[in-house]
Length: 353
Image 1: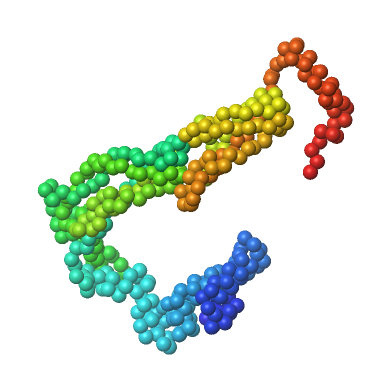
Image 2: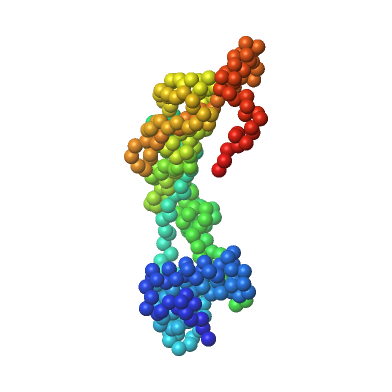
């Protein structure tokens, strides 16, 4: 008896596509082998996957509703309602349509043998820019090579002898069969006539771009054959790491080491930002590892409006050695603060959660 696919997912035959999808997600999560270690859970999970694969495909679902069996058991069954269903299964077993089977067995084609155009290959170019360039956007001139058609130097393809197609003999249990396919060397043109040409282009890099982003330049890849469209050029962007700025999306981060006295007394300092400077006010009593936010000093949001922010973390810088005078002043400061007793009451230093 064939599997009841609707029953497997726990839905009725009148269930909508969204209801089938929702039921599948719920029951698949329950029986997933990584979650359910019970005996039979894996087999159940495979049945669930099979049911959803059929019921989520409108054509396969229609055939299942009509014949009551899934594709894998209906194909070529010749049972009730089989009709052309048997031919469809036969075709799928050979990995093509009925005309492809005709080609395989008889070395010909029910279609025209005329050469078909093919698109040219896409090309990749890797481009590295600085963080400052990513912040403002920049025009970059690049040099690269691509293939262009050259009718003047065209010559007959030696692989297919100018036919654009090659014959492949396949030996099977039923004997030898001949199949015709497009020549891999000339791409069906019958002639070889492309030359490598150096090209110069100016690429506009938008502000806010990130590493891993790619820019597509249409029709700048290799030329196509027999009037086929040229491929595209894809420019892959890498933003070079900065000496002191760190980036997270449109936000940037910087860390400053300031003398501990400036954190105690407070200060106003000029700090670098991308392509400029900004003023940071550090209030008195600032603790080490404090982070300040400067609005709109990050990078532009490439898919939105405005800019990100800049975050400045300050770290207290303590001297490694003290002169006798400095040590005496610090000891006097310790006495004034009453900090000496801390050494005898360590629980006061523990940070409680």
